[in-house]
Amino acid sequence: MYCTAVSAAIDGIAARRVTVEADVTDGLPSFSMVGFLASETREAAERVRSSLRNSGVYLAPEHVTVNLAPASLHKDGALFDLAIAVSLMGAYGFFPQEALRGVLFLGELGLSGEIGPVRGVLEIVSNAALYGCDTVIVPAGNLLEGCVVEDVTVLGARNLNQVIHFLMERSGGGIHVLRDSSYEPPLLDPGRPSRAHVDPEKLRREQEKKQGADFSQVRGQQLLRRASEIAVSGFHNLLMIGPPGAGKTMTAMRIPTILPELTMPEALQITKIHSIAGTLPEDTGLMMTRPFRAPHHTITASALCGGGKVPRPGEVSLAHRGVLYLDELSEYDKSLLDMLRQPLEAGSIRISRSRGTCTFPARFMLVASMNPCSCGYFPDRSRCTCTNAQVRRYLSRISMPFLDRIDMCVEARKVRYEELTGRDACESSAQIRQRVARAAALQEERYRGRPYRFNGDLDSEGIRRYCTLDGEAERMMHAVYEKLELTARSCSRILKVSRTIADMAGSEQIRSEHLAEAVSYRAVDRKYWESVKG
Image 1 (cartoon, rainbow, N blue to C red):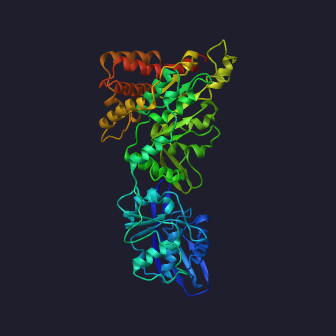
Image 2 (image 1 turned 90 degrees about the vertical axis):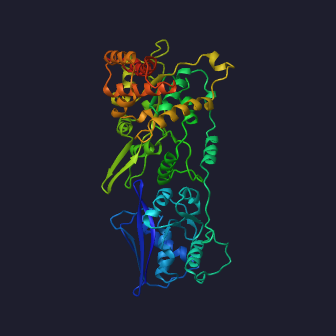
Image 3 (image 1 turned 120 degrees about the vertical axis):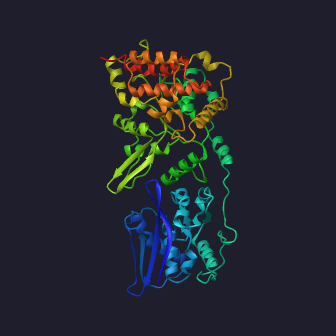
C-alpha cells in the first residue's frame, strides 16, 4: 500500500514543502529511505521503527520504501520523523489517506515515542496554508512558537500516541493499534484543538524585565550617553574609543534598554531567524525585544557571517534589527572585520556553497568599543608608554574602509571622582527611551510605504529626498567636505546622523547646529588615526 504525509524543510532561511511517501509491498523485509538525505535524516529509519514499537504499533516485516520529495532539495535534521511515522502507518492500513489530508507534521521522535522540539517551526507554520494544510501538528515544546500564526490550527503533541489518537478520531476509527490504553488523555482533540494564546504585549513586558541593567547606573560620560541615544534613535553604527575602565562596555550593555520597540513584522522576522538557527530562548514563542549579540573576538568567519556545509545564519543575521556589539574591536582579526563591510552596506549577506546560495538578512546596528593603543592611554603622553609606531600598528588593525562605514565615533574620557561618587540622579533608561520612541515614531511615519525603517537605512536616493539642509547648513557641509577631505560615503553618513539629530529636535529641516554635532562624531576617529600617520 501507499500513503503520503506533508512536512517541510528549511532551505537557508525559507521553508520548502516536503512530501513524505511511504510504500509497503511484499518481498524481502527491508527499510529504505531515499530523497537526497543527510545522515541524521537517514537515521530516522531506526528512530521511527523503535518509536512505533514502543508506542504499541507493530509493523509486519515487509519491503518498505520511504521517499522525501522533491529529490533535488537536500534534507537535513530530524524534523521529518513524525511525518515518516504517520505515512508509514497509513501505508500499513492503520488509517486512510484522508486522515492525513490537510495536516502538516513536524517533530523529532525519540525511541520511546516522545516528540522533541525542532528548528524553524514559525517559518514552516507561516507557509502551511500555501502547502494546502489548515492544521499543523508540532512538538509541544514548539507550540507557543507555532501559535503565533493565526490563520492555521496549530496543535502540540508530546508523544506519538497523542498523534495516533488524533488521526484515528479524525478518520472515525477506533484506537485498535495501541498496546494499552492506560496512558494519559491525548493533548490533541479534533473538537477542541490544544492551542496556546500569545499576548505580544505581555511577552514584551516579561522580556524587558529580564534586561536588568539601566542607564542610571552610568555615572558621568554625558557624551557617551548622548551619542548612544542618537545612534539608537536612527539605528546608526557607533564606535566608542577611550582608556580602559572609562565605561565603554558598561554603556554598550545598557543600549538594549533604550532600543525602540519592535513592530510586529520585525518581531516575526527576528523570531523566524532565531528559530531556524536554533537560538530561540526556551518557552519563547515570539521575540518582542530587539536582539543584542556580543560575540567574543575569537569567533570564526562562518559563526560571524553565517555559513557551514549547510548554510546557517551567523551573528550578523542573529543581530538583524538589533545590535551587534564588538568589544575590544582591535582584537578581532582584520580580515574578519572587513567581512562586515558588505552586510553593513547592503543589510544582507549572501552565502554561496556548492549546494546553492542563501541570502540572510543582516540589517543590524553595529556598536563597537576599543582602546586607542596597547596600553590604552594614547594620546595622553603623561600615561601612554607606546611609541607612535606601536600606536600606528595597533590602530592599523582597523582598516579605513571599515572605519568609513561607522556613522559615529565618540571618545570616552576618564570619569572624574566627583562624577563617580556624586549623588545627582542620572537619567534612567525609561526617560531616554521616551525620546527615542518619539524619534522612531516620526521616522516610521515619514517612511511609511518606503523601503526604510530608520534614518540609518537610507540609501543615496533616500538621502537626497529626506536629508535637506537649510542655506547655512549647506554652506557648512561644503566647507566640511573640503576641509576634512571626506569620501562620498562618509558625507552620506554625516547627513543621515544629522537627519536623526534634527528629528530628535523636532525639526523638519537639518540646520547648522544639527550638522555641526554630526560632524563632531566624525572628527574623533581622525584625532586618533590621523595623528599617528607617517
